[in-house]
Length: 90
Image: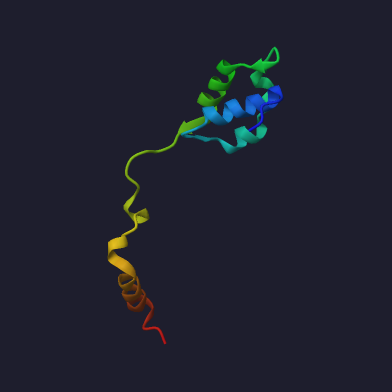
């Protein structure tokens, strides 16, 4: 990402600060990056405050069982389940 302008530098700083976090979409759309700039440079304290107030950490840990795949089960199990639910394939 090019940081030729203070606005681009502010966007880059915001993107970096949001790594590993979920931002509030409405807050991102309403954000004026010029509010994060002081004296021609990025104010990192303002970026950190915005991130703290408008984002949450991404969840970590085990994913719910309904999202886990079972590669060891193979295709045959899926076919058997489909036939059980919807009848044999013609």
